[in-house]
Length: 213
Ligand SMILES: Cc1cc2nc3c(=O)[nH]c(=O)nc-3n(C[C@H](O)[C@H](O)[C@H](O)COP(=O)(O)O)c2cc1C
Image (cartoon, rainbow, N blue to C red; front, side, top):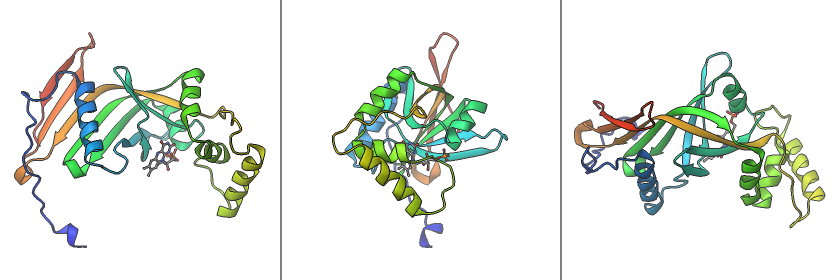
């Protein structure tokens, strides 16, 4: 439990209004590339925060699978807890926890399902083992035992031997999070950090605001 008392210095990065890229997607892509270069484990992992139908928050990690000027894309089960939350509230947060780089990005936006064709494209890129696991799992539902889960997978493996095409389950697909706000946080000495927030205007331009640490 030593970490509870530690005070690690976060150093000093050159992250200011002068060095930040004017396009937040380009800035995000540059930091993601840095996380890849630093060999952060799963650099594309992000914590998706949602609002449950009863208005309580919930969060979990998902992987960023696509990035464009339109938004941040991930894939999941459309019957999962998060998907049920998104039916009630499209508002989400995405948090990229790049602690090894002393950086954090938080996106606020709304999540929308992509088309069946776009979900198919993600499905077809998935290794067969992951396809079968996704098809075998009723994500977020209780199950009596690991053995029951394994039996569901074994049955699908028998149905779809190695190399066979596994059809995308209707309840598996992609979402795009269209950002409204993107905050870039860079650690500095004495906890006097930098926070630059991009906010999208009505004309789709981005305004930058500095927030106090
Ligand atoms: C590193 C990591 C990556 C994950 N990636 C995904 C993902 O891309 N899609 C997904 O549905 N679940 C992913 N999960 C599992 C989710 O965190 C979560 O357990 C699952 O989606 C069910 O969440 P829900 O019950 O809130 O819907 C990942 C978990 C971890 C730790």
